[in-house]
Length: 329
Ligand SMILES: Nc1nc2c(ncn2[C@@H]2O[C@H](COP(=O)(O)OP(=O)(O)O)[C@@H](O)[C@H]2O)c(=O)[nH]1
Ligand SMILES: [Mg+2]
Image (cartoon, rainbow, N blue to C red; front, top):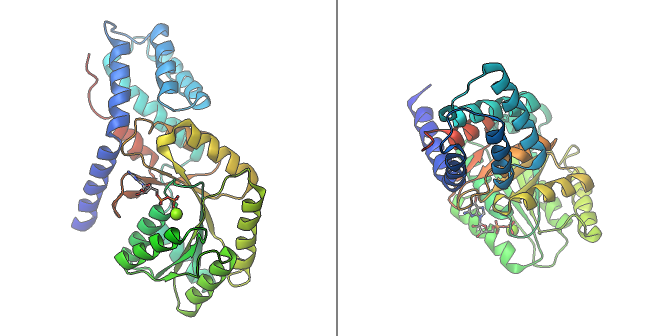
């Protein structure tokens, strides 16, 4: 490993640790309270743990699986000291996520993009969806920046034509990171903007196209039809587009984010998830439940408003960061 990648690994960990701080503080203080006066992990403590995980937004199904693993571990090892609780939680949750997905981290986007471009001679197309305010445009800006840093040629499409401010926002991102934005005027057909963006990308030999869309709810048929139309129109230019439909979720809404994902996945093809705003919330545990219970992988996490505050999700790094350190007794 060279110096640059070592350095960026360190920075990545610092951003992750800082972003998860509130979730970690909340979790550790609950765990510390639960083990106060206890030396070994027993049934009573496991009951408390169940409550702690559920109230930390991990979700009921995932919590049940975690508790089950802990019960087996305690039965196997007999006397498990409470001072090891966070280490054991870390190990069992990591093992659980690994057993579900068979991997802890998704393939880096630049590699995926390069493969597609090499195989098809066409750009890799990402369509970004989700409800209003979850962080779609910001996530797109960050992704475009990072892809550009990795040497890819990127184009963004301003297909959120609903408000003038939405177009301005992505244009501003484009200027900041020096990535072209294809747009039309406010109120124009988003599918037409997507069409223009893909045409421009093909004409200019772009590697990656990222299309922004207006906030939409899964239960509004008109808006879901609009999404279907965008997808249909894209195929006229790049026949296997979109290669990725990224659903953005606001992690600070905890279980609501999980529910939103479930509903969206039911009504439209979603191939990847991004969970944003993990900084400034104690509800970061929701990422554990989302990546364990949903069939769609969490690919990105948002840890702040800076361009570098978006990371490829690595379940092991995430769990390590969350449970690292000593529990105070
Ligand atoms: N703290 C924090 N804020 C974020 C993050 N991602 C997005 N935001 C903020 O959330 C707000 C809404 O984001 P925006 O991208 O406009 O959402 P959109 O409506 O889904 O496009 C903006 O103020 C963003 O700066 C994140 O990871 N952390
Ligand atoms: Mg937006």
